[in-house]
Amino acid sequence: MCVSKNMPTMFEYQRKIVENTSAKMIVGNFSRNTGKSYTMACKILYSRPKLVFFVANSDSQFKSLQEKFREIFSIDREVNSELQCISHSNEKTTITFINGEIVDIYNYRKFKMDDYMHRKIPNLLLYSDCLPVDNILGEQIISMVTMPIRDLKRFFGLTGVLVVNAGLKELY
Image (cartoon, rainbow, N blue to C red; front, side, top):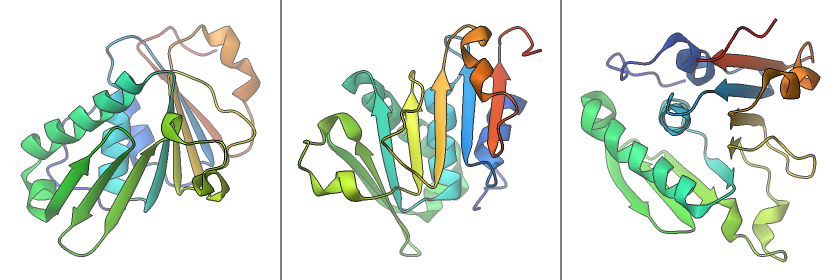
């Protein structure tokens, strides 16, 4: 994992998600305005997966993620100095680093049913404000939600699943 010495300030619950490489699935239960998009952007920038699928209920959430990249590049000089270029569209964001690493982030809402991308398995599968679904696979899956803890009980104690609680009452 490529973690900058000057990583932007994060709360402990955000750091647990960004630095985790072992959990197959992470469910982040965040309150409103506690950094879901920021955490997902940090995870992408510091772990640098080659292929990311971003699943959300609206295109505005993909735009929010794109804005967080700009924010982090303006804060973190070390990561900014490693950036060669970044390009954004409604369908995709591509981040190219000077060492040749390329990160492609796709807005899953823009996939067509017959799109070849449905057959790919991303290194990182991000869900924004929704829980994972069984028919989309990923090497690591992160779901960032705001919901009552009782609705997340099915994830407690599962092998390879980390539940991170942020800004809400304790899980147990």
